[in-house]
Image (cartoon, rainbow, N blue to C red; front, side, top):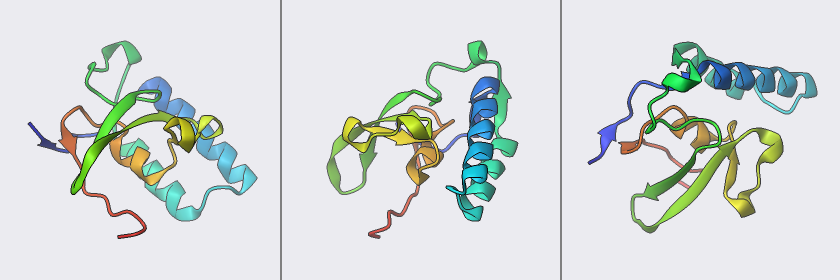
Length: 119
């Protein structure tokens, strides 16, 4: 069963670490203003919980998820990681990537609308 995206849930620890990553990227000039605003909005509007209280079906940092796309028969396995660990060959996507931003904090069975660069 597919559900509309639930309210974003993050662990207190994940939010803290993501904020540190944002600050680092800002200092290094490797993140643009749009990404900063988008991520900060998500972080400020998320429901924050202690890590031990996060439901098992919620996508957190280092979660491995299987993603299905409309009109594409195969599922893609992705793991949400911090930027320095990202490797598309290994299926590890940065928390700063648009797709990670869409699925982080969601729940198994949620579906999202997301338009890729190619349309």
